[in-house]
Image 1 (tube, each protein chain N blue to C red):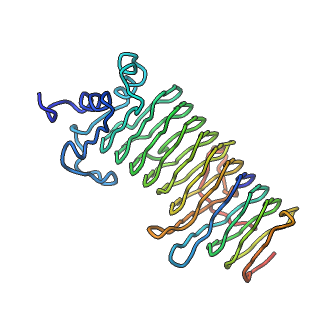
Image 2: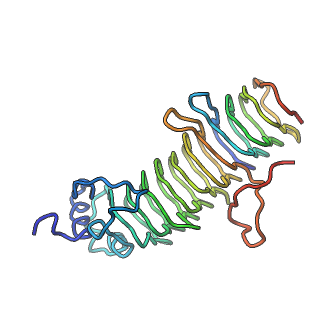
Image 3: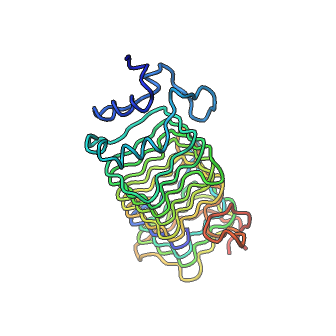
Amino acid sequence: MNGLQVGQFLLMRGTKEQPATFVDVNLANAKIGQLELDGATIEGALAMRGLQVGRDLLMRGGFASIDLGGGARRSPATSISTAPLSRAR
Amino acid sequence: MSQKDKCPEDWVWEKTRSGEIADFNARLGNTLEPKSAGGWGDDRRLGTAFLRKLFYDKTYLNDMPPEGVRIVGAWFPEGLTLPSGQLSRHLRLEQCRFDKPIDLAFQELDGSLSLVRSFVAATPTGVDLTNAKIGQLELDGATVEGALTMRSLQVGQDLMMRGSFASIDLGGGAKITGHLVLDGGAVKGALNMNGLQVGQGLFMRGTKEQPATFAASTSRSRRSASSSSTAQPLTARSS
């Protein structure tokens, strides 16, 4: 998903009843209106270097690793909710 | 001659010309499961030559209503090969079984293309929509055992893909003007969306009916030297 552009929402959320599972997500250099990963299971890396989110980035869940470096940014009004990271970079 | 005595092609054309859905399941009183190889016979058999005739022979095209071709429960043992053309009507092939690939690369389709609940058994290529331009594309409930190649695809409205796929390549500057819906979808191999543009929402959520499972939704796949443009199953994790 490197360089992905989404005008409005990218919804990758899951719940216990309605799980959503991903292996190694690469959102580097993506431009997304709003990104929701709440409750999603991501097995492996979540790369977000250079990611631009226009509004909210919601990440309430457990993630093995997250890379938000390399100029990743969000708009000033953005709220980020993150969960405990088992291994942050 | 009774309806049931007509050959499948004549019957489909008769239904199409009158703006009706050619539903083989209803005609034969037996709904077949596209994933199951059993039961598919000549009474449901259609081929590329027939569809090519409907869309490219003016004798047929001039008589085709705006609804286009809508077929349910047909068997395409030779797959479907309709690349590099222009289809000016809807093409809906639902609950159908394809034993060989579907090739619609470089095809321009003003209306909708539907493969809802259809099954494509072919491998390694399942469905090729490279550089196609389609009004609306519906793959809900479809199962494609081979690669689903959609590089540089352009969809004027929505792309609905709540189905099961071996791999999806939506790279190469593919553009979806409306929504891309993969809710409850399952992708066993690589899901390449590098550089994809989605005008509205991209949905990859789990659903009540089916969890969403995307085995490798990244670009960091290992590629062999001979496959630089096709998505490969991801075997490496980020370091």
